[in-house]
Image 1: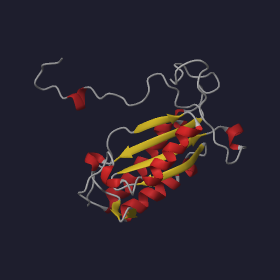
Image 2: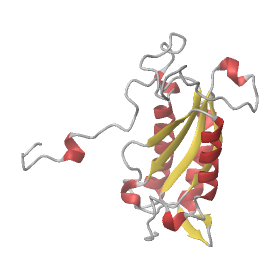
Image 3: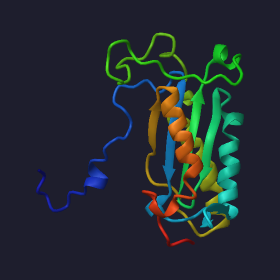
Length: 199
């Protein structure tokens, strides 16, 4: 345990929420959650179990829907803009998978092993551009929303550092997450990110 009085664990030891050794270029489905700084409710309010977007929320919605324009290998599935966070499922595809319209692609589990990600990138994806990662997609989305917020509001710090993600490995998990996203507005008051101080 570090005893130095000036040690700040948030500043000096930020633990990555990415899975160590996982290849985020590989095809598959990812459930991402992107949170506002300090859980500030910047994007609207929940009224009668429904999300009502304000101007910033509508911009966040537009930026989310624009992701495939900037990242053609990304396919958007279920998503929701909440008062202080965004949930969404993003599918990464390659040229071959893009030919299969509407098909759900799940990252296969290694045979006879626990559901852990591969420790090394596959040879087919290791030379792909880093701009094709989930991280780069999230960064692009954050930048778009932040730019609008800084030009049109007095909010400077929009997003919490980093983001959360789960790799979706099978159809049951996919369906559970879709249900969670769909029901998130109606379950707002019991949500982990709940903050009743709406701006």
